[in-house]
Length: 132
Image (cartoon, rainbow, N blue to C red; front, side, top):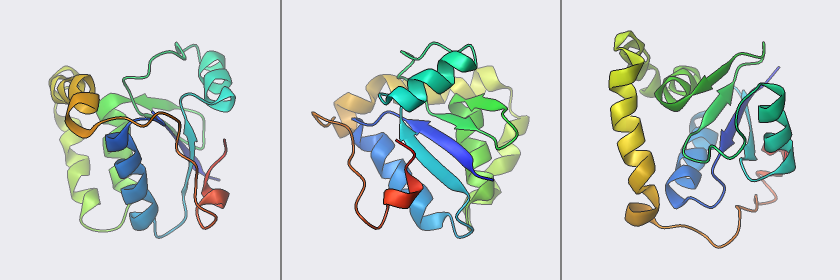
């Protein structure tokens, strides 16, 4: 079973985080789809989440639970190789505080890191990790 990461496919910052996850996912746990894909839009609708919420990364646990914003980032970090699991205890910080930082970065990500004109196209080596 795989965890699914839904990310903004045109966001340079988000794509760099996908690259990091791929490099640090030593157990091949994660699969990816851009939020702009039909797959992600339909999956979010199924879960009762607005598919136009492009300001967030979503992590869907293999058992179906959906995590958003900083909770998704920390749960993803838990599954990566060292040192990223060391971030997991930050879950004890109340989400409204953690998400202040997350939302600040999300609001400014295009301004600071830029944006692509089209969604990411996985390389041939990455293709098996991408659902859509």
